[in-house]
Amino acid sequence: MRFALAALLLFACHSPTEPNDVSSQPHGRLSGVVEIGPNCPVQQDGYPCPTPPSAYTLRKIVVYDEQRTRLLFTVDIDTRGLYVIDLIPARYLVDIQGVGLDRSGDVPKIVEIHASSVTTLNISIDTGLR
Image (cartoon, rainbow, N blue to C red; front, side):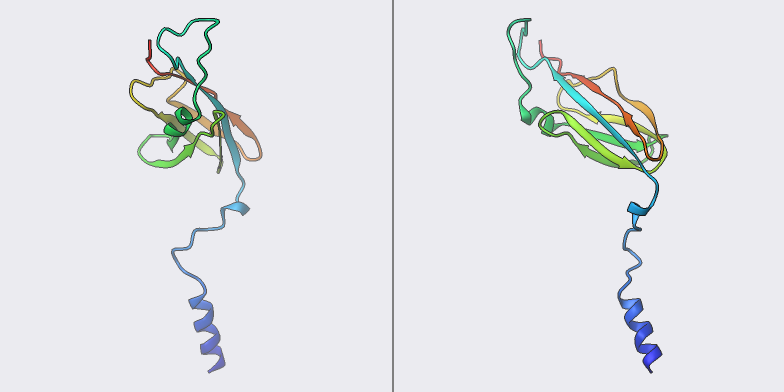
């Protein structure tokens, strides 16, 4: 009877839908800085038009499997333009989830993540505002 009760308690405490503990798996980091602009029509040198914090929060970094068949992660960009995500070692396709006419020559790009190292991908987004 005690064995059956112990087995029942052990089974009840573990859910088959619980995610595996990924913190114990080797991982690397993908990070970078996102620049967005122009932010004003007819932006000229000497006439600063800084990127508002909301411009970063509206956009996302998206991480797919290498073949772009599955969206794996959507990563927020902080109000200073920084993003970071820890990934298991593999090759990934990185792109942006932009707004309006956004485009970038920096993405889509395949990146390779290695254990215990940082891969940097800086992204410059052209808003198309002229």
